[in-house]
Amino acid sequence: MSLTQDLADLLAQNRAKQPKEAKVIMAKTDRELAESGIIDRTLKEGETVPNFTLANVKNQSVALQDLLKKGAVVLSFYRGGWCPYCNMELRGLQKVLPEIQALDATLVAVSPETPDNSLSTAEKNELTFEVLSDESNKIARELGLVFTVPEELRPVYESFGIDLPARNGDTTFELPIPATYVIAPDGTIVHAFANTDYTKRLDPEDIIAALKKITVAV
Image 1 (tube, helix red, strand yellow):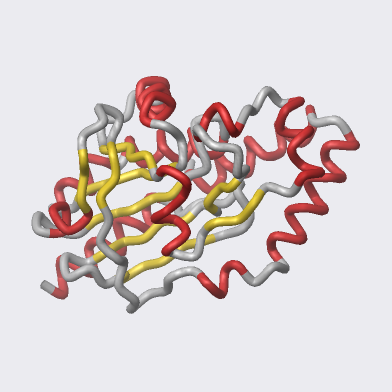
Image 2 (cartoon, rainbow, N blue to C red):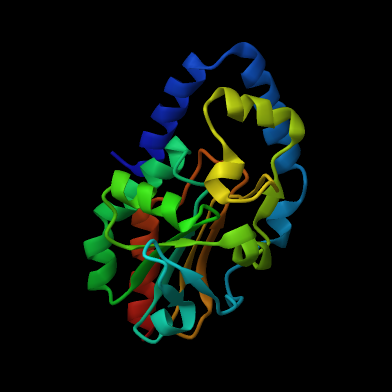
């Protein structure tokens, strides 16, 4: 079964359990985000990802340009370890990690969570690839991915046990929309995915297909 189908099944399960009032608010804010034009501001295929350096779960610095010297990079932005759809995506990426590495590529996941919370996410999902902390969404903002969680949605998150200020170490309530970029060694994006619908993610098989095209081109 594909990640896309697994996510759809998870959505159906979660919607069945959510209070009606919460579903109404979530539908409204989801629609407003989709209509905000944020997708138009995200990086597209053919554009170049700016270099960045972020801390991993061990508080060690990881630079994109260093990773690109080794080959292609798969860069995945997720909301946080509190998001069940993000966790499912991360586990899906872990499953295809050997295939990604066989194509001389590096997989990196990025969220605004603090290094300690990123470590918890990595341990919970048994991840063996780099999980980086984008403090205050600085890099996600450069890529056009950042939005602010509406005030009317914040109590809903709190009712689900989601404490964004604690997870991210700030009070901005900013998050990235989910996005995945397959980046060639020269920094050019060869496949771009960004979606305001946080229940949708790039399927791992599409990532592998994009990486194979880079290998053929080289």
